[in-house]
Amino acid sequence: MEMRGFLLFWSVLSVTVAALSLGPSFAHTLESLPRLMKWSPALWRETTVFNAQFQLFLLIGAPLDIAAIVCPAVLVWMLRDEASAFWFLLAATLLYALALVLWTVLVKPANDILATWTPGPIPENFDTVRLRWETGHMAVTAAKVLGFISLCFGLLGVRHG
Image 1 (tube, one colour):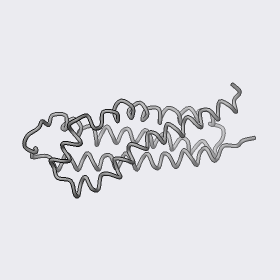
Image 2 (cartoon, rainbow, N blue to C red):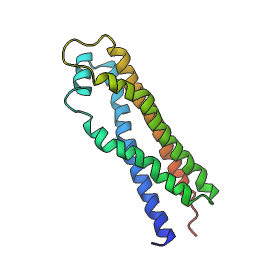
Image 3 (cartoon, rainbow, N blue to C red):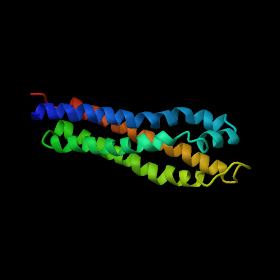
Image 4 (cartoon, one colour):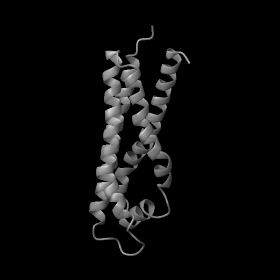
């Protein structure tokens, strides 16, 4: 495959993977306000912790999150001599990496606690864990949105001649 075709392939792949990674995070953010303000603790726990509601977020989302770092990183290397694209693509790569770090630091500890919950009385630490889980997803989404925007600007800066 010629370089131009290879660049087009990685560009489309990167945008697709980045969008698919952003989608579930954005969905979490869209549903967070009612989950925080209107849902009862019992409903929140039932839908979040039990019945494997978020199983596919792990099985499909986690590989997408890794690929959303790797794919733009390949573009960074391919376009290292094009300053108009390079810096935006590097920012996109780093912002998607930051999103994964934020998930690891903010959401995973909450997930670890949620994994210990069982049916019965609402745990005493419910409000703290719920707030950390919801706001952690919001922080992840913010990093991914900025990363996606950077990726788009980077690809718009590629010279096609």
